[in-house]
Image (cartoon, rainbow, N blue to C red; front, side, top):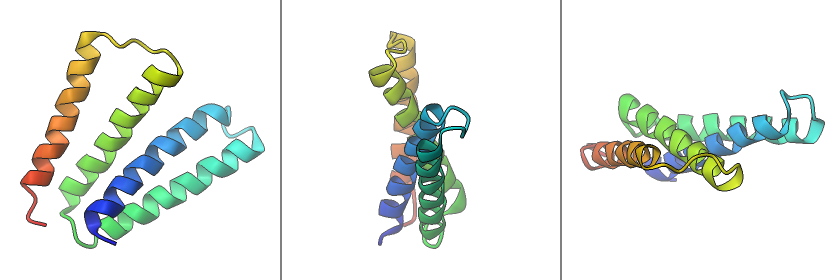
Length: 107
């Protein structure tokens, strides 16, 4: 598996475990808590694979960026959180930063 593919998958699992934390109600609901823990393990496992070939700083920034953008989008879509222009601009800047890091990566 390529480092970038592993990194994107790790970021998506980060969104999944953040959502799982919401549904598990502080890890007090059994099945949502199990799903959250599985997503955490997959996210960290895939991140460790990505770090074999990608620069540490780039991988970490992109991983957290995917998690941040993904959770904010889930919040907007699922929980009707605000979608004002400033939030959209900030999300766009995070994505632009991740794209810039990818384009400037030696791998």
